[in-house]
Every structure is written in C-alpha cells, then in structure tokens.
Image (cartoon, rainbow, N blue to C red; front, side):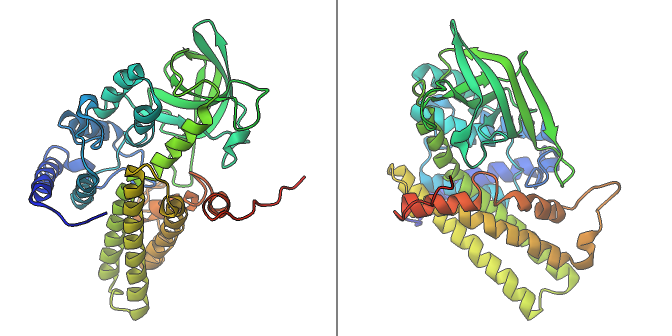
Length: 394
C-alpha cells in the first residue's frame, strides 16, 4: 500500500476529523472511549444513537457502494478514517458485526434482493447482527457443527444450539451456519442462513464473563424459521461463504482494532507517568516493545488489505490474527504491571473495573475466539506454507 497522501486525501481527513471532533466533544461526549474490550455493555443505547448518527452522514461501511449507504472509499481513505476515529476517542462500534462481517459477505456472495434488503439497514445502523457459528462441539473445528435446518414449504426450520454469540441479546438478525444435508461430508451439506432473532423458537441465555459483563450468549433454536430464499450463496455451499466471512474479519476490522490497541498503549504510558515509573529503563523498554509490535500489526493489516483488494489471500492475512491475539494478551499483562498494586483493587463496589482491568481480563480470550492459536498455526502450516497435515488421532 502506498501511504503517500494527496490533497484529496488531506481534504478527506479534515472532513472526517472535523465531524468526529465536533460530535464527540458535543452531543456524544459521554460515549468517548467507551465500549472497548471488556466494556461492551457500556452505554449501549447511547452508542446505538452514535451508530445511527454515523450512518446518517455516510461514516459507516466506507468501502461499500453509495447505493447501499457507503462512500466507495479507497483503502487509503479507510485508513485515514480509522486513524481519525481512534484519535478522536470514538467508542466501540455496536454495528461491527454487520459492517465488518455479514455486510461484506452479502456484497460478495449474496443476491441482488439480499443486498437491497439488508445492506442499507446495516449502513444506517437500523439493524444489528450477530454470528451463529460456534457450538459446544464445534468451536475452532467449525465443520463439526450439528445445528440443522430442514426445508418446510417456503421456510427453513432450524434446530440446534450456538454458543459465544456476541451481541445476540441486541441483534435483530443472525447469520447461522446449519447442516442442511446430514449425509454429506463434513465441509459439505452446510448452508449459510439469515435468521430473524425476534421470533418464537429462539432462546438467548447470556454468559457472564470474568469481566462481570455478558457480551456473548448461548442461543437455542427450537423450530425457529426463516424464509427459503434467505440463504447466502448456494444451498449446501455455505462452507465457502463462511470462510469468506472469516477472511473479511481479518481485513479492515483488524486495522480499526490496531488503532484501538494504539489508544490502549497511550493510556498505559499515561498511567506510567502518573506512577512515576515511565523513566524506569526496564519499563520504558517494555512500553517501547509494545509500541513496535502495534506498528507491526498496523503494517501487516495494510498489506493484507492491499492483497484482499486484489482478490488475494496472503501470509499476512493468515498470520494477522495469530500475531495480534498474543500481542493483546501481553498488553493486558503490561497494563497490570504499570498499575502495580492498584491493579488488584476494583475501581468501585461491587465489581466496577477500570478500563485497564477490563482489558486485561478480556484479553484472556483473545487467543481462543475467532480461531484458537493452535488452530491458526495448523492453518498457516498446512494451507499457507504447504507443510504436511497434522497426524490425526484415531
């Protein structure tokens, strides 16, 4: 990616910065910096209003065609916006799953009718989405899923269970991987369904985390229904679509995530200054190392985005998640080291945590969700480097 900015890019940056600063220092000042890792429950209604304010002026779904609410933004323009968003202290996005996962999937694999039906309501912030992938026996081994869907007239009837479903309690829609041909091999016979959440036959049970919040949930489908034409891609061809969704997850979302990490690093430096340990040579080196790795994450994400814009998948795309998951865990540990003894004291009764404490606890999961580190190493070894597959235990 060529990072030289033109006069047009500078004008785009000024437009984004002026709008973000104006809003986040004005009517949305209360949501600045909220809703990050471990803080997803904070000010949801206010952040939903923020999402809709972004959508009203085209600051969501930047790369999408204008007809669906986007700006046809280039990669450099996306980089610029994410930089300014982080600099202004933009809150965690409640529309992240819609914009970053299902939206690009529908754009790439969906029908014209699906694009017209769903994309404008994602970009406007009107409808929120959740992801129905993982199951109790199908996490990183996603092909082991057992949720099934059977055609009944002009509707699919869905039965099964999903787990670790982020934001399900707020979402209006869920994209669900379900087995539609139980006699087909593991990676076949799976379809990618779009399912409305507000209906009989769906039960949502929040899962309380060590942060004290319930960002994700168990979701039970017991005769839930969706229209027969709400299949993305081909019936029984959902595995290809699902892998496409995961590729989008490794794309522009990673760049926005990196900028969030940069903001967390700045907070750590501020805390180190407050405690007077920023001049300690060992602490300075640890902080400098995190800064270097956050920059590595940034440039790796940009290389991956450039490759994806050409329709390619590169090593950078594959290793990105493995790299940032370990980095973020180390950042959480360093944040606690910076706080010293105060890291063990809750911010308020009964269990109110500081942002640093919530981040530390939340990052325990970074090396598991979205594909565990062990599985990522297998994928990189076998599919990227062409090494022999791991021996199967029989």
